[in-house]
Image (cartoon, rainbow, N blue to C red):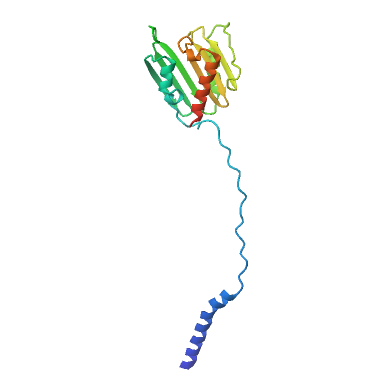
Length: 197
């Protein structure tokens, strides 16, 4: 009886040892490469700045450039930079002058232009009814400019897509922006610096 159990055990052992080898001798099923997905088109690159970015005034008009605009006059900056919008107000006394002047820059890049439109309408409503509002051809998608009879400053509103900017300044002191080409140049610089985020 003992021999029978030994033979049964040996038989099972031999069968179990030969199964993997037998299985390895069987022709294997053809393997197909995993299906490849067609290359997906690259996601469109968003143009313009991140609407949640905080852009400081020194990025919009770098200090060296600002000093050139006012011919090195001493100035003080008040800044309010928030996600999607930046307010900059420089106060300075022009070279050879005695009275303080202002240069305001307000940019918006949150994607909502309603504040820009509302501010323009409100500002114009404070001007005399005979105020003349002009447009500079080729400046952004929409622009308005006038000489304020209330403040004496040049006012420039520009929209490029969903980005907006507002300048208020004295063109007799900021000579670079005393012409349409200078306004266009400065506006384009600011839009490019906004988009650099």
